[in-house]
Length: 146
Image 1 (spheres, rainbow, N blue to C red):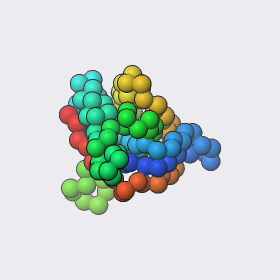
Image 2 (spheres, helix red, strand yellow):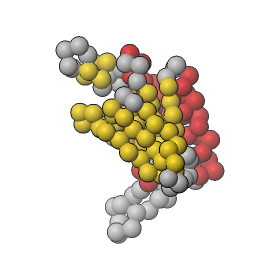
Image 3 (cartoon, one colour):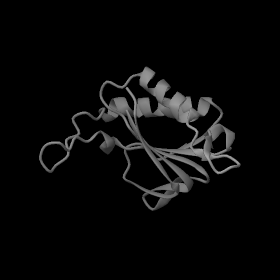
Image 4 (cartoon, rainbow, N blue to C red):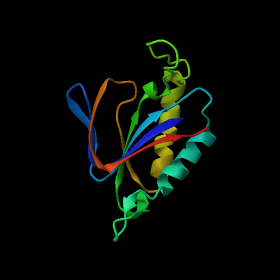
């Protein structure tokens, strides 16, 4: 599982020229599920993401987790994060979890995030989406979970 996490002041996702979801201050998570990801992978990812202290405290230091900010989370499924570009010029997606397996795994990931009392919104799984964001900092983390 690969997650690109961006601290944002706002983010939104559109599908077919209609806004599917939007958030204010919080995190945008681009989520790539890979073959072999398990419920344990999801649980580890949620624990780590929820506990990351990437928001500023009163002294301006990154020392505060999302739960302490009242921030929101926007999750967008993105299978292209599983691309292998080591050979040739065309990405291979052999490591990406097939959509039939990835859809329920993505939903479980979202539900685990929500279970902590966080506000979580999503894009539309499998749709062609336009994602907009204002990256705050900028703070962008590429996270690998197994």
